[in-house]
Image (cartoon, rainbow, N blue to C red):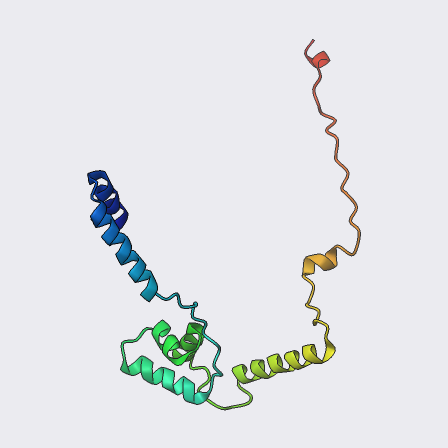
Length: 152
């Protein structure tokens, strides 16, 4: 299959200036009608039991993929997977795992907004070990080393 660029080079090689002018005019018309849309950004929609049931309904009654369901409902594909595979967000129980993690996240956000300072993260275990200075291990000398005198 020939590309448009190869076609244009062939027209130039044959000296078909009129065809090149028509091709250029078509390009300009195409650029006028073409629009560059900004990349789509899926904003997180709050997961509710109703939305979880809608996900299960779409998953069970259509041949849509998880990505297609997520795009249609305006949510993350990972959330669709959690509902389909693990049944998350199907109850309004405030003691459920997802409800507790949501409440903890909201509390962290409130603390961050009120303090104007970031909440310190836990230091890795390796950082705590650096507090105590380590002594370098002395190199052991090998006293069984041979010398030339041993062979004479």
